Amino acid sequence: MVARVLVVALACLSLFFLAVSPQQRLPERVLQVTVCELVKDPARYDHALVQVSGDLLHGFEAFQIYPDHCPEAPDSMGVWLEYGGTSQSGTMYCCGVIADGERSEPLVVEGVRTYLKVDAAFQRFDAQIGGKDLTRVNATLIGRFFSGRQLRYPKGKGVFWGGYGHMGAYSLLVIQQVLSSVAKFPAIPEPPPPPNQGS
Image (cartoon, rainbow, N blue to C red):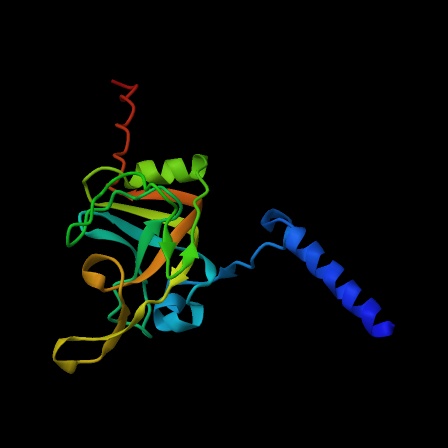
């Protein structure tokens, strides 16, 4: 009798959890990391949802957030970036990649479906990196990190983590939310000084 009650209780509990929508479940924990931590030990953060801040470059064959002052990974070029969801960054790089602005379906990487929060912060960031000129932006981003795999440099001179971005030479951060961004390059010119009132 006790066993039957236990089975019924477990069945009811299972049905309850199946009925709970994803929005009602506890949100996934976001790990706050530095760019240096990501490039020093990519495998540790593989598939994790992370928050990271730093300088990034965008332009022809470039959309990466790069580590400053990271002696543990002196040869790293940084982490390649891409938008999640159905938006695309419009970055032109390598081997027939089309720089369209939209995808027909949300981006899926290694079986993980991504999203993008399209709000005022994202639209400001997207405008800051837009265009064909090389731009530099300091940003705080939340995204899904993909380490890629260990690859060997030509002629066997060490290994690096890659598989994504230009020439497949990077790990990947799929941007899912922009928290803040400040354009740093090209520099905004200083306004001219006010006329000398004494003349």
